[in-house]
Image (cartoon, rainbow, N blue to C red; front, side, top):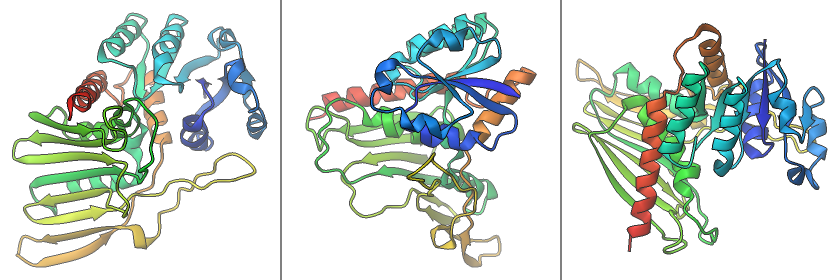
Length: 336
């Protein structure tokens, strides 16, 4: 059993960490650190987790010899501070994405972890989204032949979005960019079309980035001006095509903690695969959705810690994604 602590108690912790850790027999969330100012008017939810000790003193976490791993799930501007403190006190760290504000900051954390013989890793949990796992299954089946195009969408309709600042890339596109990098690695070329359409000149609220891998093009798109539901993934190969709409992965409990389901989603949201086989016959079939389970990343991380194994999210992948985010924001600032 590995005892862990979490820094922060916001949306990410409540909806994307705790529900998936609940059913893990090899991980125990022992403590959650919250700043005193973050608890004001928001203490009732703590009662949902009677087995977890909540503290406003970070030293309670750092000095607890039973805690091996600290999960940093705060705003990005505090990731470096908490990660460094954890490492200096001999704790492994799992840091929410974006891992740091810049690749230079991230590199310093990785170097510190290496000197301490510890693991520091980004929480790229979206690699375990059901829709992405379904996409991987189809690509690996070979039925599409040679892939020539992938479209990955993360869209909303928020025409009155008025939050200033460049945050869509770091908040949403970071997921889909990392998914792509986990599949194909470094691109031969990247073309950026990142603009401010909802908040002109003040935000990166439209993202259209092309990654070229030889003759294949993969496009990551995020927009706040998409009113009609669009497929999450569209893939074309020289033998066929595949589309998949976004997979839902959790249910809400208004009077308690977030609950998630591990049941296969209904057939009406399965992917559609149309292809031609070796004999030239055409087929169209529904592809059962894989199940979203962000706890898998924790399982792989525990194995890396316990057995000195390879981290599921590599340092160079994290640094590469952060550089892409930086370049995308710069493109938005320069767009007219």
